[in-house]
Length: 356
Image (cartoon, rainbow, N blue to C red):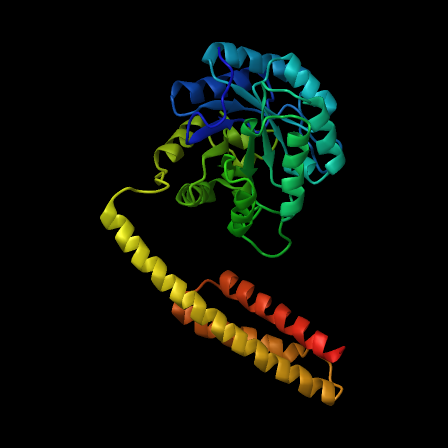
């Protein structure tokens, strides 16, 4: 069984139970997934970072023995989550092929540094780094750089997008915030980006839609939680699917080519791109004019010693624009994001005028 090479296959499909609960559950889930021929890596949680003590926190070292049996029986590489030096040492001892750093660990530079030092100059193990729970690209990039600084080869490092914690109303457990992914990709353009729809959605009905969106955005693979009896799972039951449902979902994903060599396709695409470039220029010209008008408002407020923030006016703008844009077919989330960005810039400019 040779060394796992990250990037050798796209899309890369990683699947398996959220937690290795029993030997029978772990092996049977893995065998059903492996027999399909659709899964490239078997995953399972061995140590589970839970919010509350006293809940199921993983089996620990014995589960690594079960995963070794899975690897021997299926010939597939194995992936587990690690959160500290001891986890890394156990995983290396049992020949685990892929380690991933979870969202709760990525937020801690101390924890990531400890893991990076435990992997110092390790050229055999692949490390996947999940985004932090908070939408902080600096923390995510910092975790990657700590691994690189300790000599982990960059080609052995990949990224996992599992969504971001959000304290407003959302149908997702961790909304995807796709724009954050574009920023991370610009920093590490050669690294594989894998989507984790299970943690983004938090429930089975939404999985297929998010998986397809990720494929449309040219993600390099998926990590999906699968369990032989998901409703009886000891952790994250609502977001896990049976191996058969997992395979059905994978069969229904349409993977997109990153580019095409057809001249007609490129001609049509370039025409549309030129139109977008022109429209973008017009949009920012209008935004520039709006900000100059906002500056005049700031001067009027300053002359009359009136506070910058007028909450009734802001609420009126949001209400009016949401009514107008709803008829255009624009999503409310998008409109609110744009309005808030404009509002913040306007306030900053007025604040500068007020304090000259």
